[in-house]
Length: 255
Image 1 (cartoon, rainbow, N blue to C red):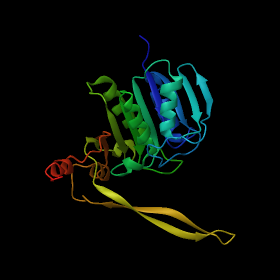
Image 2: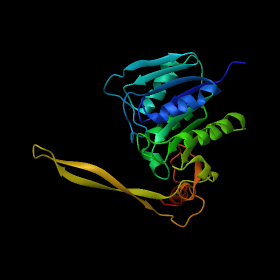
Image 3: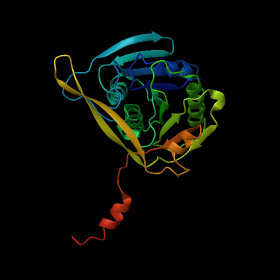
Image 4: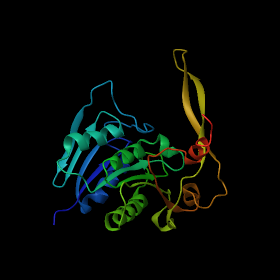
């Protein structure tokens, strides 16, 4: 039987070590197409390019593998692949392995998860994968091991579509990771700080920094709790942003 067709993308760029670690990990599982941003597109969320052209460059082609670089955002990469490049629908969409966490509210800002969510719009099971290490030289060995565990489960177990999973992996040696927890998204938010600096020409500029404010420090069923205790976290996510609590309340208003 022909191996399944798998689509891979990311938001750190086509040259990122996390992406290439994922490509090599999943090559034995199927036929792989990769469309990834030409450069880093971290923090782009679900942005698409509308006011400038997109450019596509073939980076690599081997038996069972095609790699393209796209000038646009991670979501552009998914749209370009599904609507212009693919001759068949993939069995799976993978986005990552991201350099840095996408737990809690970071899922809203994440280009990695924007791409995974877009993949789920095509009714294909989609997984965003992130390692809690921002460094370019991060060690992805444990992340690969646990990414494959999740991927193989999704490919072999009964699932319900649409499916999109947000998977975060602690920055620990594989032997120190305590297992996998399916959990809910932690409640919290980022509070940004803009550090004012002056360039050599005397012009002010600002550098973004941020601190995560955890609103559920004592909760034991969240992704933040799982990660803090050495577990891989998996949060099933959906695009429906309706606040049903407010909806029920507002239906009782007199208009």
